[in-house]
Structures are given as C-alpha cells and as structure tokens.
Length: 117
Image 1 (cartoon, rainbow, N blue to C red):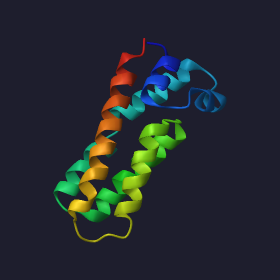
Image 2 (image 1 turned 45 degrees about the vertical axis):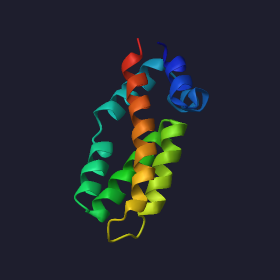
Image 3 (image 1 turned 90 degrees about the horizontal axis):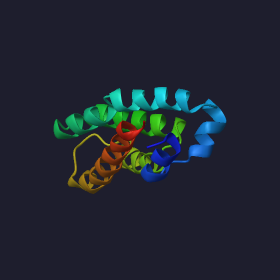
Image 4 (image 1 turned 180 degrees about the vertical axis):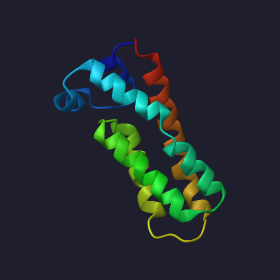
C-alpha cells in the first residue's frame, strides 16, 4: 500500500501532511514513530488504573501526534476523549464509549501504517 492509499484508508489528509513534510519517505518515517509511540497504551493503562491526570496527558499527546500528521479520523476521536477527560479527577463509565472509538481508530491507523510498502 502506498502512503497516499494508507491515508485514504485510515481517514487522513494526505495532501495536508504532504504540504508540510514534502516526501513520502519523510511521512513514512514519522508514521513509524506513531506506531512506536506508547500514548494509546498509556491512555488505556491509566484509565484502567483510574489515573485521570495521566490518562488525560496520554489522550492529549495522541491528539497532538495525530493532528501533526493529519491523521484526521484518529485526531477527532483523540480530541473527543481529551475533552471528556479534561479536568476530571475521578473515573467514570462515561469514558468507555470514547475509548472504544479511539481504540478502533488507533487500530485502523496502525494497520495502515504497517501496510505501507
């Protein structure tokens, strides 16, 4: 799969990312960093541990990473959970549907990144 095809499949904005990074090789290099990044795992672990401050931080980092690389679908779901977690000090089942969407978008993103030739 090409970088552009991966962006289409994962719901990203290839042209926007290309306008900043200028080459597919550079985009691939940064996308690999997304695959290696632990923000999603940190989000899940900290929600499970009810560590709201760290869960918020992980969600905010995931939002920033996906925004900077124009991974639009993941950015939208990461933004939504970031806003739901903002200022929260106690765990709530209200977070679970947001986490489910982030998980789905994250897994699709990683699958697409790993499929790039």
